[in-house]
Amino acid sequence: MTETNGSTTDNAHHETTDQLTFQNPVTRYPEIEPPIQDQPEPGLDADLVPKTDRGEFSYRGTGRLKGRRALITGGDSGIGAAVAIAFAREGADIALNYLPDEEEDAQWVRDVVEKDGRKITLLPGDLADAEFCRQLVTDAVDTLGGLDILVNNAGRQIAQDSLEDLTDEQLEDTFNVNILAMFRITREALKHLEPGSSIVNTTSIQAYQPSANLLDYASTKAAINNFTKGLGQQLAPKGIRVNAVAPGPFWTPLQVSDGQNKEDLPEFGKNTPLGRAGQPTELAPAYVFLASSESSYVIGETLNVNGGTPAP
Image 1: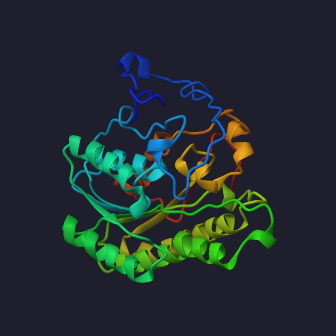
Image 2: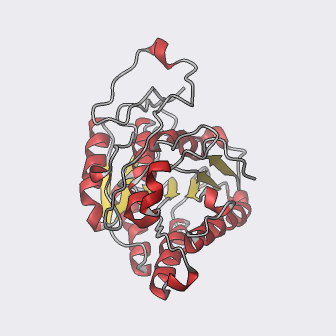
């Protein structure tokens, strides 16, 4: 086990070793009923109600990424923050990308990682900017001294009930951030990735079960699945593995910054077989597995972490 039992409160409690064995996934985290709330895009974990578990108290590493150097996009909050904390506790140094408006969350992640004795570099910027995508990789390599792991996690999600309300601006921004940036960053990263390196992309249950009000977002997630499988075949002979993680309903700032209709927030995640939304730290082991040498024969895989919802 790489995790301990967690809490969604600000001061998560620590558990004894005996309490970590065979946890019931239904009750490991409480079923949440988030109040109707709104944050301006992109949203902050610092202002989210209830708070998330990103692994500060609930993730224990075992050295599986010792000496590795990872660039994580969208790493300030939610899934990206949990992955950054997990990677650091597995021994990796981190370059963290996020939007400048998310600085407060990014500083929190930096504090957690530095307390664990790992190096972390903050690289704010907008992935909708093609030139920034190229510069981001250069800056990450310069500050880390190289690159072994790329986690393409950044995503934009804005719910629209009608296709007629989906503007060209939103459509282009969503595709730019969610899939075009992935092409650009990965292409640049290939100049530095050596055999044994790993690329892990964040797709979604939306790639298989698209919500009617997330047409643009769901379409990009399906594209990410295809990108992952195709690139995995292309890079396998070079010893570089490409895989993806497909989260189900995870409680993150994405949901309250127009990622969901506000009236749907209290029921968020309750339609899964586990009956609750996931916490970001519950995703982290999937990324660690795919980034580590333990998954050396896993290529082009989409690992579903969705509370039991059937998916391909």
